[in-house]
Image (cartoon, rainbow, N blue to C red):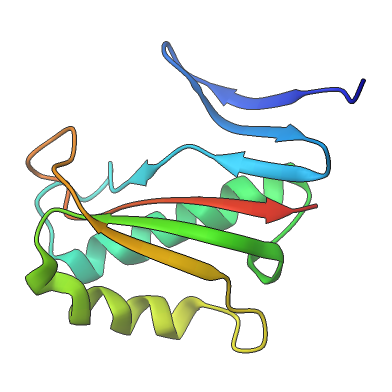
Length: 117
């Protein structure tokens, strides 16, 4: 059986779980910029994803799939501008963007990824 590693525990969950050569991140939200624009929040969330992947021993070039949650699809273009500047040009993951209510009204984006080690 493969070991399971858990990173950055909180009261309810771990921010990342590593198993079977993959790292699964929890959905990341912009805790440092509540109420900021979707562009500012997206940039913060992507930094958080970078940090989690680094702590797991991988990076954004190894992301297999990403799940993006937007409460307002009118923000899709603004979010994509930040995403497009961040994503590795030759290693774009599969991606799903979902219109969804988030846990706090001041969050404008949440992102979770699955990456290979």
